[in-house]
Image (cartoon, rainbow, N blue to C red):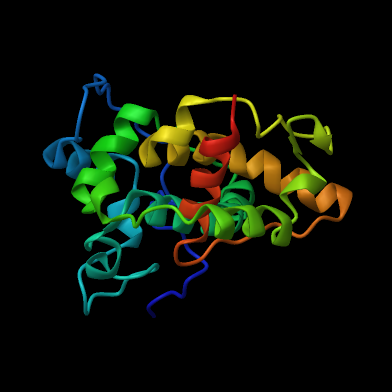
Length: 206
């Protein structure tokens, strides 16, 4: 039976004994789709995302691999990572690490690129920051909570969808656990919300 949206775009195989890591050198500019395809298989994604019509656990490959924005894909990964992490814990599997260079190549294979992201809507981004409750865990230039880092501090991930996705991929499981611990609703991002949020943070960071 084909699975629903609770599975992430880059879900690694739950039956794999351990995640496979490929050494991918960081390069400037766009990623390499060929390396991304190899990573898609090595990280186990191809076991859950099969071609249309096959018995796919997650969304079919054609739904995962389509023209999309880099921050759009980063938002979809953010949304699905907590549910994926719970499955990993049940199967006693290590959470697969994906570096920025690897994420850049994966995005190239999945046809995700910054040129497909619309211009960030800064007012929308500020509204998203408040509406999603980000300041219940984070501060912004010293205002807000102190659980997570200050979002008003300049960081490289604000300038790259791949860098943001890689950073969030590593930290999202811990963040989701913390949100449950303190009773905060884990935020989900749709359409252009994440792109606008990061655009706003980029504009005020120092």
